[in-house]
Image (tube, rainbow, N blue to C red; front, side):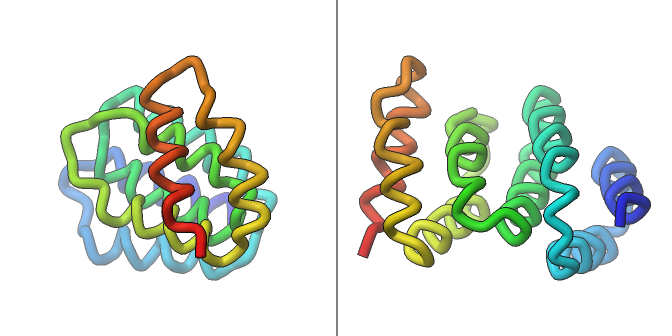
Length: 133
């Protein structure tokens, strides 16, 4: 699976990579259930955010959500708090689905984030908590 993740990150960095193939590869990794990839996915997510690559943020955020479940909500909230000028529809959907899938875990993980020193993070956590059932 690590080889697939390497291939995915290479494709995300390649402006000429086939979009459908990239999405299919991300879906394959997400469907693998390989939670061992989470640290590397988080590192890649941090890297693409630093590079201001909103497309890669969206795609990696979805894979992270699929493999990590509600436990990755803090990472997704922090990723979402960075304004890269996109609409974040996909990332927002992943966050909302995780919040609604496990409301207790979501509240436990996100409530402390509403008091984060970074106001963007605090606001994003507050926004996510509005989707609790």
